[in-house]
Length: 183
Image (cartoon, rainbow, N blue to C red; front, side):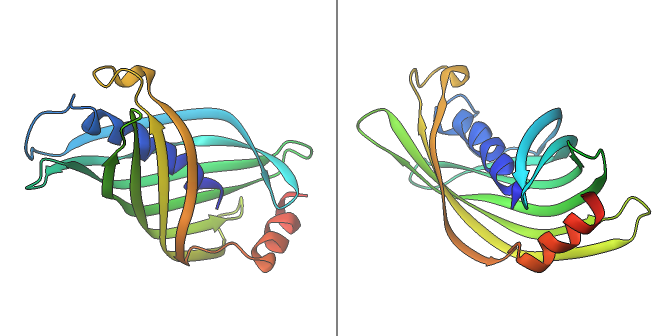
C-alpha cells in the first residue's frame, strides 16, 4: 500500500548503514528512532493525497555467523492522508516488524536487501471510526548503489520490487471506502 513504499526506503536507508560496515560489530541493544515528515504526495485510489505523519520504534542489528549484519525494526506509523483537492482526510496507523532477511553484495558496488514487513494497517475516519484494516506480510527486494561503502550518506536506492504479499492488500472496496470519506 502507500506506506509500504515509504517504509521500504526507511528500512533500506538504515540497512545501508549496517551493510556498509558503519555499524558496530555484533549485536547490541536496540536503538530508538523517530522520523517525522510532511508534504509527501502520492496517488491513492485516483486521488492525490498529502502524507503527514511520523514513524517511531526501535532498531536492532544482529551479526550472522557469515559476518552479514541484518536489521530488525519494531515500528509504529501514524499518518494523516489528506486529499489535496478537497482537504478531507483519514488517519492510518500501522504497527509491525520489519526484518532484513538477506543482504547480497554485488561486484558492481551495489547491494540487494530482501526485507519483510509483518503487521497490521488500520484506517480511521476523522471521528475515530475504524474504516478498514489489513494484516499480513510483504517482502520487498531493494537494490542500492553504495557509491562509497564507508559513506552511507551517498547511497542511492536504485529499485524496489515487491516479491511476495500475504495479506496487506488494498482492494477496490478499500478504495471505495476512502473515496467516500475523502472525495
